[in-house]
Amino acid sequence: MNVVIASLIVAAVAGAASGGTVTRARYLMGTVCQITTGAESESRIESAFREAARIESFLSTWRTESELSRINASHGGVVSPELFDLLKRTGEWANATGGAFNPLVRPIIEAWRTRGDGAVPPSDVVKAAVMRANPGNLDIGDGTIRLANGAEIEEGGFGKGYAIERMLAQLDSQSSIVNFGGQLGVRGTARVTIADPERRDVAVAALTIRDASISTSSGSEKTFEIDGVRFTHIVDPRTGQALPPRGSVSVVARDAFDADVLSTALYVMHVDDGLRWADAHGVAAVFITPQREIRLSGAMPRGEIEILDPKFRMKD
Image (cartoon, rainbow, N blue to C red):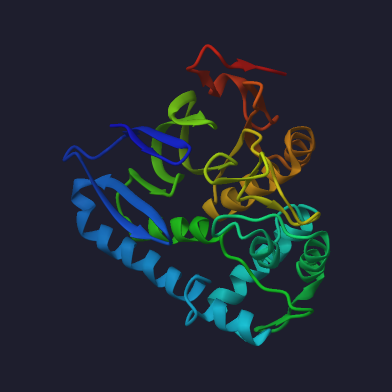
């Protein structure tokens, strides 16, 4: 079975029940969400989709009535225990990554209009957005959130990862894959491939993951061009700049939330700084560069990666 979504290709589901597998898909959180699991677990698929819809209902900033949208509009307040725990985790990752991941990135996204057709904002607008996105503007108290200086939270860097974790908890099969817009959560074993960042239907490298998630951040997924300069939908929260297409970063982690956060953070850091950070924190990461080089962090053994496209080469 080959399923091509975003920058990952699901090659196989190993260890499926003798009854075979079933695959179902829904449109959730602005993208396709696909579940593949043992046929005996089909009754659980609806529960998993309902769980994703529930998470979207309180976390989506595309919905003005969601809990997160209300918190943004009111600059904080008392939040549900679930949202409180999520935002606490995002704040911890913002500190750990030096702001390369930042849940307060929304003002910068709005300045560049990356949710629309894209635009290059004036320098004073960028400066103001960076000040609003300062991680220090998020104050997490005892069940309360306070957003200072016009800060707003953006769920795009962690929402799907969290949904994958919760969906897998609803599936009782020992072999299941949740493919949420290209990020995978795997229960059991799956052979997956990472696509060429510029040709999303072309597999570059393959690896096997077990009871883990793999998330890929790639600048080619959504781009816009202004005066001959190409930008991506990924912004650097530290500088306020929309980043150029520069390959992809795939992160393998036990927790899909962590994989989601870290693939974004490492893409923002770029290859050399990203590899140093990944090595210092034991993160398994695969960088694919525009020069068609594949570079691995120390936690990703070279023997785990099979190069499928001879135009790409492994670099130490």
